[in-house]
Length: 132
Image 1: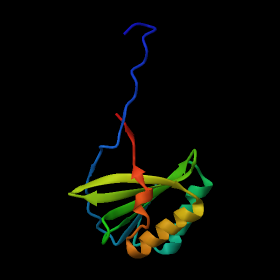
Image 2 (image 1 turned 90 degrees about the vertical axis):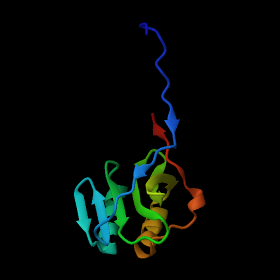
Image 3 (image 1 turned 135 degrees about the vertical axis):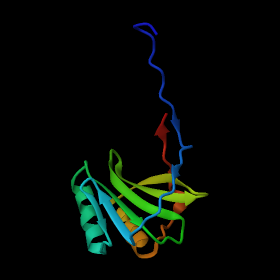
Image 4 (image 1 turned 30 degrees about the vertical axis):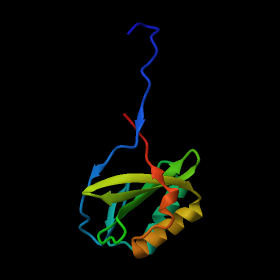
């Protein structure tokens, strides 16, 4: 490649799956500060407020017992608002889907997942694109 050769174009794919990992605690709340086990809804809400207040924060809520193939919900800030991603289990793998939402919608998603392991309107989520 010469000095003025074009850079290779980065490609994206949605064809990425992660190995399914069991959750050994009823609830796990993860952030860059570590993990908390057996968390209350108030602890989840406090974690979400940290995400909304600091663009460097992220939050992941994982449940041990799931009924709707969603193992975890995670969120962070992005250029367009708040991104919420779901870890959807299927055939011993976990695929990521996401959508952009408001802070209130993010809270509602986490609340529903925390209380029922469900997330409404899965058709509104799109596969996460990864650079390869």
